[in-house]
Length: 279
Image (cartoon, rainbow, N blue to C red; front, side):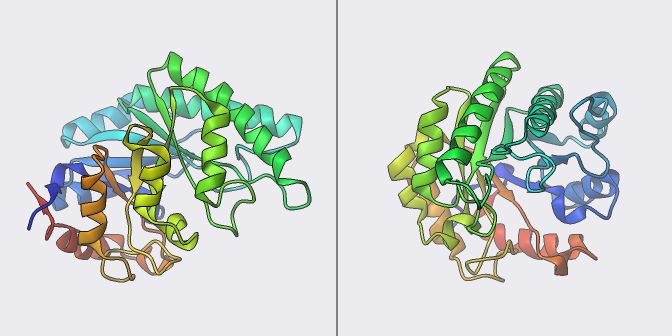
């Protein structure tokens, strides 16, 4: 039984980090995929606090292949730039980095910029990191509004964040930012590690505030192709659809086993996804 349009499938190019952007885009065409989530501050897509990649060559690469980039993801899981950072100079650079990410997202025709909670520091009270993350996202949401972009923030795992590894923490962040250009997104891995369900997220945030999803298999850790983890693909899709979710289903695949030949694993993943997705 087909549950959702295949055109709502998207692939993040993280597992192609050792390949050129052209190679990744060509493989997506081979798979019939129409939407890609591009990673900025990354090989083939330059971004830093002072400048960013000229978007025109990237747009031409996308357009010539009939591909779209509805979501842009600046690199946000390394220390260099994180939303709960403390030091004044790093906060300034972080704001510059993600402000440029918003502008590049808009130039690429994206609707969303992917983000997370940030992580604060382990040797300080949780409240301090959360306060800084709220302030950072409030400033960035203003930039997003000016550029017709919505920030979509995912939760992280306990090993990654002290301030955003649970649904309750993300609700505090969301309520604190309190801006129409700041929404949340479901990440199945972080959600699974926290022992939460998709329905829990919709119950807390409502369909109107869940704008995106990183929708990969897991166990509960890992970011796997479907069939290599323990989640039930059909049931997960059914819950998303039943709650009125209208966004994309991005495949965020990070297992090192995929890096040598990511296309091999993408083909297997798409074969599984097509059981429930129709053209």
